[in-house]
Amino acid sequence: MPVSLFDTATPLAPLQAELRAAVERVLESGRYILGPEVSAFEGEFADYVGAAHAIGVANGTDALTIALQAMGVGRGDEVVVPSFSFYASAEAIAPTGASVVFCDIDPDTFCVTAETVRAALTPRTKAVIAVHLFGNVAPVAEIEALGVPVLEDAAQAAGSRGQYGRPGALGTAATFSFYPSKNLGAFGDAGAITTNDAALAERVRALRFHGSTDKQTFEQLGYNSRLDELQAAILRVQLPHLERWADGRRRAAHRYDASALAELCSLPRATDGSDPAWHLYVIRSGRADELEKALRASGIEARAYYRVPIHRQPAMLADLTLPGTDEAARTNLALPISPVLSETQVGEVVAAISAVLGP
Ligand SMILES: *Cc1c(COP(=O)(O)O)cnc(C)c1O
Image (tube, rainbow, N blue to C red):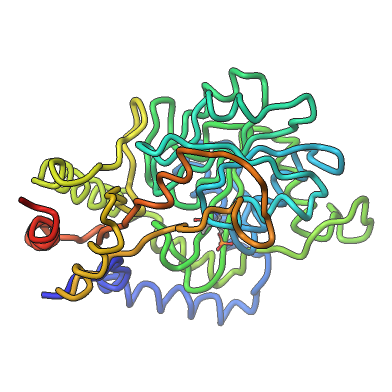
């Protein structure tokens, strides 16, 4: 049987009636921008994450830019970000006027470490973007102990648990994407910023509405970046199921962990004390490209991520040596994972990989 990389449809199928009712409720309300659905979702999502404030915005990329600006990042500052991430993690720095400084990752966890961040710090460093890549939880407390504020890029980590709490409640602020394929997905673009800092939350609220708090006075240059009522209503139907879905992802990952795969390739390692809701289950092999082709030929969808890391992208070229990044970029391959990936499906994937890499 074919196994796809994601399965967003099966978990949503039992919620169809509730989702349609939510959409209808918004259509009938006549309120489409910054109304009761967005306020309610912001409260519910903040509670889930364990942060004092959540602010809905248009997408996860805007969330990063707005959060950085609210943290005081601007021209003349530097922001440290891993090169091994989705391109937006670095791209979002540019509108603030600050410079991008790339750091390395630990290829075993795919996350930054205090050591890789320390190597990139300068007196001009204003913030570090710690990406919770693939749902793994970056060591935020260890990085803040270096004396630099951390913005968590938690786009891939909704539902994960870290040693000191959930992504979203670990740093100075955090950002989420609700792009449809993420762990919590809207039916279009959507995002949020979470923080425990009330003043920072207020600055974010102003920045998402053109830099104004009263819609009359425009104190600073901001953005038009709001979460839609429709998307908020859709997210509110799904949020109560996120924990169960996250547990399904954990279960699938633990099955891969305990399988014969460990002898055939490198498996992703959860960071100390974390229990990731793996958004992607990413192995490493020197034969990743050959393996991807063979898996696809047997109906199993596997995909390499970020083969060209951000510091080698044409818009971002930086002459740097980042060995962990290069190793992850060259050898990674994401295997199918979802909240409903069954034991049988895990077995099929493992058998197909064994047929290629086994003795
Ligand atoms: C998806 C993603 C983003 C961007 O989110 P959008 O909602 O697509 O703008 C940023 N960072 C990471 C790590 C992501 O995976």
